[in-house]
Image 1 (spheres, rainbow, N blue to C red):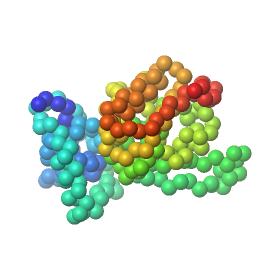
Image 2 (tube, helix red, strand yellow; image 1 turned 120 degrees about the vertical axis):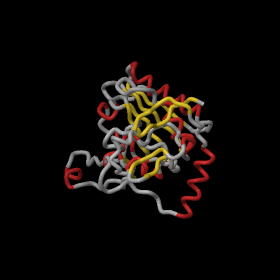
Image 3 (cartoon, rainbow, N blue to C red; image 1 turned 135 degrees about the horizontal axis):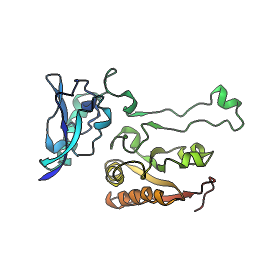
Image 4 (cartoon, one colour; image 1 turned 60 degrees about the horizontal axis):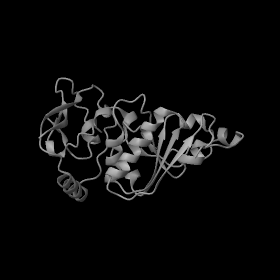
Length: 240
């Protein structure tokens, strides 16, 4: 079958190994100091490995390839858990800004404690951009998911406390980002034990793309997940 799949330019690859660590399916491995696509049927075509590549060696191509075999990937993961520790992104090389990690709840800093409202960060994971977050990560297990348009956090002063507290946060802007979020969000919902979804958008037409993508993902995930949509006015007030 012809489908979208990654391709690794061996001339651009510097052998840092970041993409192999980011590939949760195990499709990428290091061979003779270079990253290589080891199995077509392990590559889901979502591109979690792309943001980690510091040299731009990884791209998408449309070519004849074996279909993605989710059962084989799950079997490989189960076997790996018995024999190996979780893979880590190398401490040097690659793009450390894209490393998936859980964050501990913030304790009030002296500055926060001295502020009028004592506000603290409730960001629970990194990265937060929908395009950068992996489709699978430990912090998704049993998570309440917040899918928010970029502008919402700037419109409402208590956004962290009101919406982010106790949730895993994913943000994006359908007007500025290329492509549709629906496919990535579907995989996140399908592969992880998500307890509920809250969608926060602005009362502007372009934010409809965020809501539609999330609603499409909820339908396509094949799961019953409680969800709600919260719309903010440009003054930060909740409209519905």
